[in-house]
View: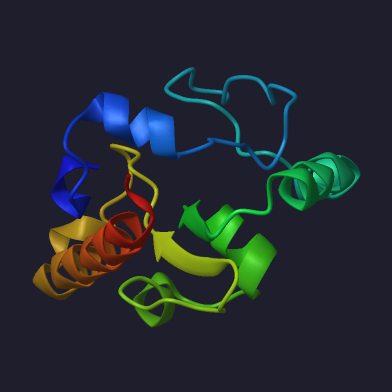
Length: 131
């Protein structure tokens, strides 16, 4: 998040609350090279917990990391149509690609530019709320 304008990791942690779509660990994949993605049913079963957290916290911005989070809040669409744009007003939602090393999405120069634009949007939000 330094590329988004946060001074250091401590500032990022002070200004953000990190939440997951699902609290339960879905297990490892069959090849033991990573975690299984949460199932749609699991995400749905846990949705009320996340929704309750968001109602309590009243965030000014949401950084949606990965296609599952993006789809949960904005509906399904290709990353190319989401990353590099902001959505909503309060909270403003800014999608990012998942940082998984298995993803090849950032191999495309246009997608790296989308990421840079998204990080700049996060930086704009940070500047509004930094103390």
